[in-house]
Length: 140
Ligand code: ATP
Image 1: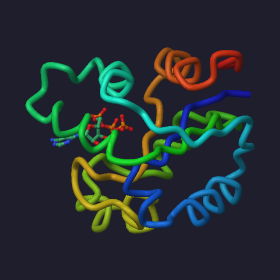
Image 2 (image 1 turned 60 degrees about the vertical axis):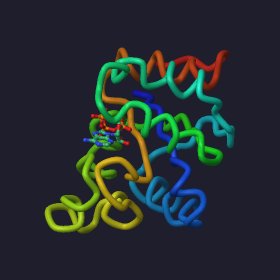
Image 3 (image 1 turned 180 degrees about the horizontal axis):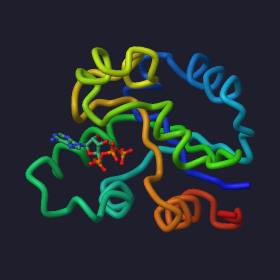
Image 4 (image 1 turned 90 degrees about the vertical axis):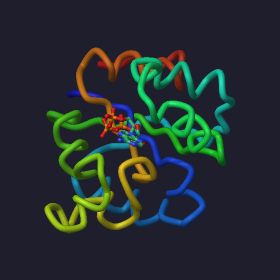
């Protein structure tokens, strides 16, 4: 069984989408292995998105990710990484609304930054991101 790191971002929590998102997760055959609601500070948010440090949107991204708590979850199912990325839809929530109307980002995202949820994009990033939030949880 494969595991991935899912995260409901601050706009998802402030918009009260947690219940709907968790229903979509369970209906799609994932088990929620571990979960935690945490407030990231600028240092932790910068570390999580370190690969984007040189991008023009980085400061804004860190501000967004520290604007309120996030809800991190370890999800498990067959082919979890690919299935969770498919369920959340494209990065830009405006595109999601037209091209992937049943996706989570279409439901609760706003634009290419405030897109409501995160999903690991590879086995390597899933391992890093799971241990980022859950030190003692195995990534596979
Ligand atoms: P995530 O890693 O959060 O699941 P993603 O893999 O779809 O998202 P990335 O390209 O890794 O997208 O970007 C990470 C995050 O940075 C995005 O989810 C979004 O919040 C923000 N972001 C990406 N592109 C832009 C942009 N052009 N302008 C503003 N914010 C952006």
